[in-house]
Image 1 (cartoon, rainbow, N blue to C red):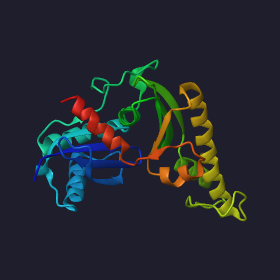
Image 2 (spheres, one colour; image 1 turned 30 degrees about the horizontal axis):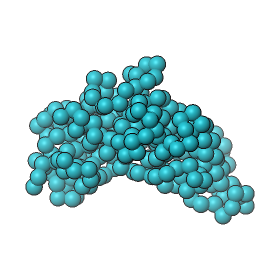
Image 3 (tube, one colour; image 1 turned 180 degrees about the horizontal axis):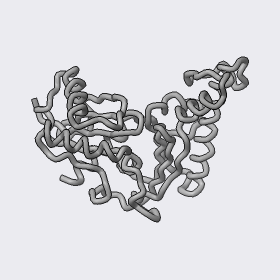
Image 4 (cartoon, rainbow, N blue to C red; image 1 turned 45 degrees about the vertical axis):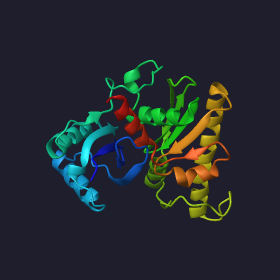
Length: 260
C-alpha cells in the first residue's frame, strides 16, 4: 500500500486527523475524536492505531506527518507518539515553519496555529482576499489580503460555550440542540432558545463579515469550517460562499508540502 501523509488538527474540543496520498489534493479518509488534554504519547498512539484500523490502515502506511495544535501540552505528546510509533519526526506548525503567508499583525507569535493553517488553505483556494469563519470552541474570523497576507481577525465565544453558560447560569433553562426553529418568535422555552442561538449567531456572522468586507472589499471570498458550521451558517443570509469541513487538513497538507 502506498505511503501516506498524516495531518492532525488538535482543537480544544475535538482532534481531527486525515490521510493524504503523496502529491494528491484529496483526503483519503478522516476521523474525529474528543481532545483529552492529559493524553500521553501511548494513549494517542492507541487511539490513532484503532481508528486507522477501522479503515484497514496501519502505522506502516504513514511515511510523514504534521500537527497543528491549540493545546500546547499535546503538541509534544503527538511528536513523541510519531517518534515512537511512526518512526519519524512529526512537523509541528509553529513560528519557525514555512507557511508561504506573511503575518501582518503586531505580534506574529500570537496567531493560533489553526487560524494560520485555515488562512493558508483559504487563500490557496480563492487566490484573492478572503475571510475564514471557524466554528470551534470559539468562533474565529480571519482575514487574508489580496496578496496572501494574514491581516488579523476576530475571536468570539463559540456556540457550545454560550449554550453551556446559559444552562449553568439560568437554572430553569434546558440544554437544547441547535436545529431550525419553527419561527423567529419562539412559542416555548426550547423554541425560544433555539431561535436565539440560530438567529443570534447568524446575525453575528452577517454583521462581522459585512464589516470585514467593508475593509477588505465586497468581492472578498468567505469560507466556513468547524463542527457547528453546518448548523449555523444556513441561517446567515448570503454571506458565506462555502462550507468546508476539511479546510484545516488541507492547509496542513499545503504547509507540509512547502517544507519538503
